[in-house]
Image 1: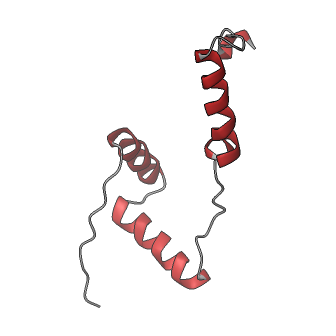
Image 2 (image 1 turned 180 degrees about the horizontal axis):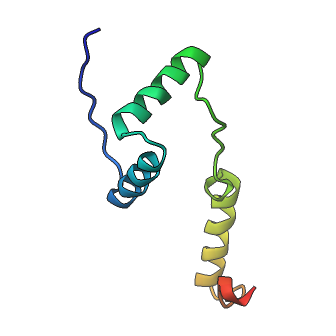
Length: 87
């Protein structure tokens, strides 16, 4: 079977992390991506659930724009950020 090259771009840190994980599984990047592509073709879908981050929903973005406008207009209240260690 003839092969072809595929070029993708990804975050350098993500690439290092996934290469380490694939190596632990006895795979290289090419084999893992080929397995993913075959699963997509076989199942005729992405083989895992993809969900949207609700932070980027239009309703939340509208809420954030209004909150920012209120703060800039002197309305509203500024709250301190809650750090993960504070919870």
